[in-house]
Length: 83
Image (cartoon, rainbow, N blue to C red; front, top):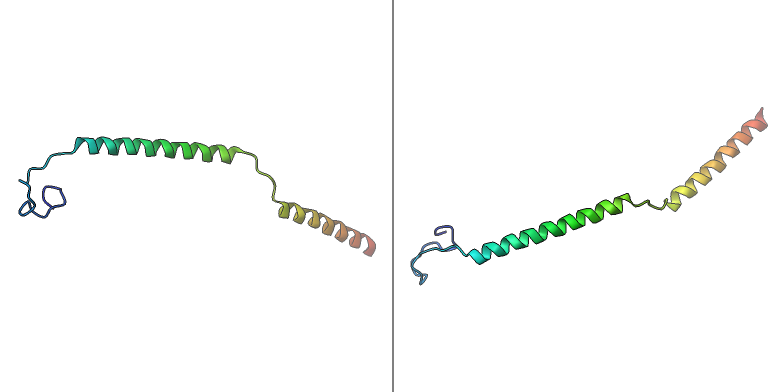
């Protein structure tokens, strides 16, 4: 690299080797970074709101709880019959 630019040397490049900073490109980078940060903040806010929403219970878990309650009643009834 020649002075931080993608050229190995200034020889044969058709340039004098004088390097200038592209100020419009720097502004574009800052604007893009600011836009990306704003979008990321919006995504984080959306994720936070989604996390605070109440979630519906899982139907499989509810069914398991009902079946378990029936099993417990059945075990109690069997124990009652034995004694």
